[in-house]
Length: 201
Image (cartoon, rainbow, N blue to C red; front, side, top):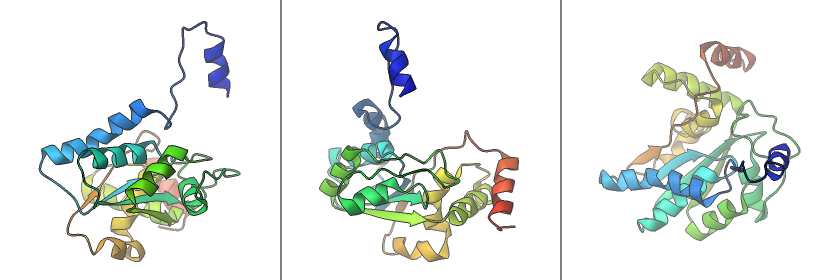
């Protein structure tokens, strides 16, 4: 609200760039699918974290552009930041009272109505809600496996590959692409604190 007010008062010298509700942002995200197609990689499924829905919109538009209507998309988010799951179940955006997950950069109080529309049109989107512990545990495992440090917002998607409880959802697919993103809000000390707070060490 403050950002929009400042733009209104700027006499055209400023612009509001929304975090997820903008076709230009979706177009940028959609190039992930273009890169897969250029490399000759058509996955059975794509796993990505979802917050407000910008990344999801881009992935779905990219899949549509390439005619990949048979690719499953798993939209992962954490308990306490699951506005997509709430909206997907209700068939319309549902506003959360607050973000209570450690995955704060994932959190949006309400998902884009366009994300819900595109998910329904694609028809192969699966909403998956995981725990903070599963997200943080996936972050720690990725760090051990690949020396890449990411936030729990990304760990939400990674948990589908690392958590024994969730991994079976993907076993029917011969190939799965995980979108790995989001590391600016974490360092080794922050990750260690999450691990301790969630009794993972």
